[in-house]
Image (cartoon, rainbow, N blue to C red; front, top):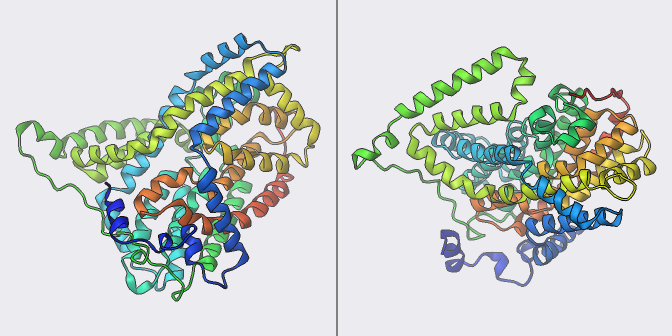
Length: 496
């Protein structure tokens, strides 16, 4: 039995003392209609929403049936499945390393000390919730995993300040806002990273889009404007929806233990362990890695250098080594981080298979399913309405395929072909995807899992608050994507 399960059995949480979900049991009679709706949606998702792997498996079956419906033979579909299954191995490893390096850095002893100092700033519970939201959103622009872990640890540190009377559920939801609002607009955006790296782009997609650098995606002024608006709005909504002191549920009232994280203080007991506890190996490895990073940064334009996933991951890996200082501490952190990559490792091969079926299994007319889908997008859209149509489609699909990188592999071949046909700026099409793709994360518990482990809460405890963000963000994001598209001009892809 885990420590959290022991706590739960010894001290029943308030939400378990009454019928219904966590927030429902604690909601006051005068709770808002929005809160009650959020609770119903949360309860439904908890009861009926399966693991993300099930949705990916169903998507494979649906795409295979779609390919056969246009005339592709079962044998051709099977060949396409097998040919694409291992096509994303480098990208799969890169995405797993994004999660690992983010966790390693955010959970290091120096970062823990930084968290404790940062937690001294807020003066009341509602401002503390808004503070967590702001930190989460800003950190997500650098690294989504750092944002998730650091903001979660900050929420726990603030919860230890009992004089704040901070609602622990609202703080947990605020810690998740980086994933639900802005992560895909930042440096760790899976779609922007993939499109900026020729080696990562599937060959069929490369012929449609060419390579799209960061300067044409996340560093467009239009993209920066959307990000700034989301930063302000997310922080304000977090403040406005946080319960006041009289209605707040603290971590103690929820039966959650909030002790500071414990780090290994073991000492070397046998000769074979000496190097595990000595910083010498860390210093040597970091020196070698730093030399290579310097070579990359000095030999290329900055935006080109940082757009490489290998360089990006190596920088954060080296920083993680330094922050942990001793190899034993670093290796323990990696071991704690690896379980969070399970979904990436098992699902991304299926995404590669889906992309292969979409683009290579040809129907009776010699065209692929991807071609038919892109034609449909062109038929129902115009250059002016395409941003809105793609935004709605990407956000809906994201609820069923909650991986930004994996879903881009599935979606990009036909939506980017449609962007070409309708003369929509290709970099902005990537950003339409990025901004809309994050929206379903606010009501989809898949990426909450690492955070929930840190907080000791359940998804139902957070979704009531993130649902309010979802209802605010969705019309705002779609409006911005549509309005700003008119400020960009199309240019044909630069093919290799």
